[in-house]
Length: 285
Length: 251
Image (cartoon, rainbow over all chains, first blue to last red; front, side, top):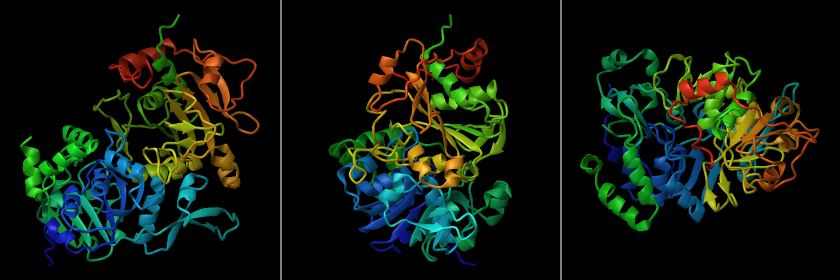
């Protein structure tokens, strides 16, 4: 029986420059933030990031690690606009930007997970998504309708990060909150060997079964290569029902982003050490 | 004489956009759209499904900010996408810009390549508008919001839908645009935006001054209807006792 437990730093050590990384969660909800913080501690660069974006995208943009960004939106939910993402877009500092409809992003991940080159949809047709991503192609229905549909290309990932509530050491995992979001698709769209799942708590398999209905066990161990125990690992995004979003901290983050000096101070205080240092600094506020 | 506030008039105008929708997901982005959906369901359109804004359909008249939910269904985002691609939804979205054919922008202001202001991104607007009925609520109508040409087309308007074939033409519907000044629809031969009603105390000159394109202006324009006593009671006592409804509007 494989014991897949590892640390965040061991997970990001398997990555290299230029890789495509998918990040689960949604906006400022159940983001694998301890893995993102580990990424910030590396020298990795020129990354392609695929995300229903929140502060994961903002932090990676602020650190200059993003060469290409693929998203349907980037938002902090209770704060509508992500400050670092805004600054990066307005400065033109992300070399390549792919802005999709939210459903197109799902379709791209789903196509990759099914090993299909594309999946057809109407979502995006007629909108400026097509103008702004000129590589997109359409496909004509081979049936009597002959309808022209958008062919969303597979979003194949080199690595995936997701954060769940519970996992066992082999990678079976459980979400206890209201929504899995698209975490299963991120894992299934990623290369075997670099599918990383952090969890609030690693428990014996039997506790997954007793801890919630079987419907919460959508992630099985064939979808996961590395399991990281990361208590408070989604901070400052939420991880219901374990904890809500840390709104006060998110406000502090958003405010600090507005000015290079205050941002430097924020980085010094929170993001210059290990994950344990981060959690200590958060607790000490 | 009604003492209805502007926020209450807007909520009722949004609610009216759901009239006749039956058993579909009435979805509202923002306080006034959400209240509109919940008010319609609580009064004249009882078969509508309304959500808590997170992942559940709620059967009770949940107040804004309320947590005491009577859940009648689970709708995580994947089910929302399934529902909207299946067409069983009418959404009321916001718009940072909108043009005469109803093309909507929530993505950015300025050139997309390097925007003056990055906003949300297109979110679900392309898929929403091509799959099911869409209306808009805009709390601050000015000629910088009602524009000749939007900077990034997120939700598609009638001119663009017309070029996309028979299926899209049959399913694309922009029902109404509700603003702080008036209600608009697209019930014109070429689907140019038309003034459907003016809110009490608003003149056609006010509306024209706050519009950056040529509106279709009928000879007789009705006044937007006032909330009924029942609607006001439900709104004030049940759905929004803490009065969030006027906070999205200019003072």
